[in-house]
Image (cartoon, rainbow, N blue to C red):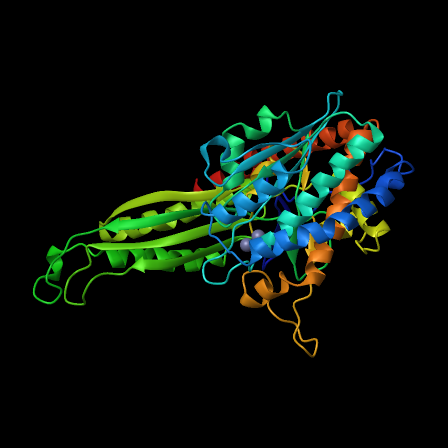
Length: 460
Ligand SMILES: [Zn+2]
Ligand SMILES: [Zn+2]
């Protein structure tokens, strides 16, 4: 529910529901002793150090064969072949009828928890591995193998699962696997992944919720000079909507983003435009706020139709929920990462710095099970140390290929493995992680109600 806090002649300050304004339930309740955690880190570290030279050629092989979403045949082949040749792993290629997805399982015969890692490997059109998914693959793979080695060495119970998740760049491979029941089938307790960038290292990265859709207006041709009154101008409908969106942008909250491009704008100036279309994206900090914003955006498109008489058709083309990081998992990762020489700030600052307006299908995972997707910095600099481009630029594709970036991915893999081994070995930790997940989810679901109220008050 929206509360008006302060009313002056000039402005009203309104308290909107926000995930960052109230202390997080887990921020002060990390009840598990930290004395047992890093005991295994030295072993994990040497395991991954010995794996690194084996993984480096695999990394380069993926990087140097960039493939678009759902077409990652080379990456799928080299990754599954690699895992098939590792003792103890049962690998399912082309999993769940998705040509470039796979599932690899290492199961002990002992009772225990199920930890999982997502492996990404899709690239971007024209600029190759400019999102560094080759590094994500290496971090997750090294972590999974080190977790397996620790389970064997320490006789830990449970299971490790590696999910090969295609098409992160807009194709939603994780969402498809989630909907197909892949995570439920393996009885996954937690899921881990990471992402490179040019911002500082962090355990609690959180991505924005987004939804994309294709908008079409259908009008009627007429001679634009001789008899324009006989036509219905679809481009005018789209321009009216575009103008309404531009006006709406001023009235949105920080973190709300509306983007679009016009893909069809008519055929010739002397014909009234019977067809106009565009692709649009709505993002916000949380899924609830995105859904609320989307309803307001819908009204803008309806306005175009109402003003011109053109028929409106909206086709959804994809949605990712926001990523809600699990603070208890983040605490374990942060501790391991810092023990390895990293410098991630304390939880509240880590969370604050972890916000990005980019979106990922890992967000959907975070609404289904506890997860973290730590951010890791890699060097993207020119010869004189000047900052070069970040993710989705050719500079970053070059940065993601360097040995230094590979080494950083190995460090991330160590901290991820440390987190997974904690789950398998520290009594009560998984319960704490799950309790927090349930609380966060309840709060997130509750926000939908609040935001609906915001919306109703807007339109009533
Ligand atoms: Zn990307
Ligand atoms: Zn990415």
